Amino acid sequence: MKKNKNTFLWLLSICLILSLTIFSSAALAEKTIIVAQDVAPRMMNPHGDDSDAGLSYFSNFFDGLLQRKGSTGELAPALAVKWERPDELTWKFYLRKGVKFHNGNSFDAKDVKFTFERLIDPKVSEFTNTGKSIDTVTIIDDYTVEIKTKDPIPWFANNMHQIFIMDKESTEKREFSDVFEKPIGTGAYKLVEWVKGSYIKMEANADYWEGEAPIKNVEIRPIKESSTRFAALISGQVDLVTGVPVELFDKIKSNPKLQIIQKPARRAIFLGLGNKLDSPTADVRVRKAMYMAINEDEIIAKIMRGHASPAAQIPDLPTIGYNADIKRLPYNPEMAKQLLKEAGYADGFDITLTGPNDRYVQDAKIAEAVARYLAKVGIRVKLDVKPKSIFFPELTKGILDFYLIGWFDGTFDMGRTYFKLVHSRDKDKGYGVFNGSSYYDEGVDFLLEATADIVNPGKRAKALMNLNKLAMDKVVYLPLHYQEDLYAIQKNKGITFNPRPDRWIVYKEIMK
Image 1 (cartoon, rainbow, N blue to C red):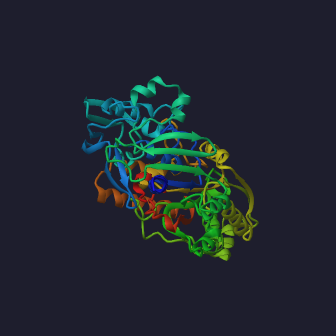
Image 2 (image 1 turned 180 degrees about the vertical axis):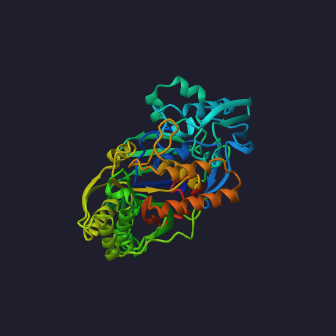
Image 3 (image 1 turned 45 degrees about the horizontal axis):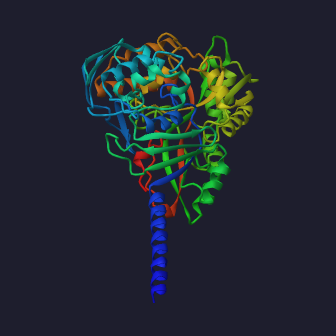
């Protein structure tokens, strides 16, 4: 009898242990998410990469003075609880108290001053244009900072969600290499381990000022190859994938275990052109001819598989300066030939189209299609597509004649967009950073600079809309389409994921 009793107790103990183990494993699984992202981080220095992919990673480890909320993109308080603009050159931020960096250091005004002064250093910052725009950063007290800009910047606060605040004390003490690999921020997650080319592991910051994130553990697996990302999803190795390729959309959608999530993207894809004196593209008739020679509807249908919408301008609908009166020029190759003839190029001309082959959805195939369309009207295009790591340094030198690029403005203000993309290049002021062909139009520059001190929202919107119309009448760029962002998740994992308009993956916003 005693033996039977002992056997029963032993079996009961085993059952309890197994139950607790299973329960613990299930609980851990509920608090963990594994994500395959299409782009790997270049670094963990939050000022060293201003691409949307880089900012996406940084947003989990760092906070800005402000933040943009979820799927709406609404500007909201973060490390600053409120802000005001006493005059056209001055911005005053009132900081949140009681916030800690991941190393335990307290956040205060000295960290804000240090951060903004750091932006001007090209060795560590790709935000030098923001840094150069600042005149002074003054600490009023431990939790109040006053920033004066050299010129009026109406969109200055709109940019504060992507200027991430760093810990002055530890950043000054650490080597560059350590700062570039180990993020110390105030963000919702702390870095656990980063094995380059393999994975990034992070855990929720239990002391986060906004409360601990719903998902405790995050593992990100950067997988560049789309078929490999898809295989990881369909096999159940990952819970969520970004950058679903358009050619796999139907296959994923038909899988009963998977859910595909579509989000109209803010990014416009377009073609930049130079206007050097005596070059064919200096003539607006040639620019219009190139525009009208490209069958964008066919690009959307056949190359983008319907996952894009035609663009007539660079700004998207939420951006100040978007002008609904701007319409696409019609696809008309015969008219394109006539315009070329009128401009003196009846026999066409030679031009090189440069672009990335690993940055935007179907970028290389779009470039190939553009070359084919232009060939039909006599323009002989040499293709020069290459990895983005080679393309963008060339772009920022302003040495290209014709190029493919994508853009959306994180500040939701066309003025900032045009200062970067359209204004003539001015290294000291940070103008024309992405003006890849060194395009120059004195009238456009003048009108753009005239908008800089317009702070009234209604007047600013009207001025930028007029500037936008003028620029597109001059065919400053050849607009193609707005992308669509595609994601896929495992249906049975209980994941609630609403994509953001900036394509960042902010894990504190995901529920499981």
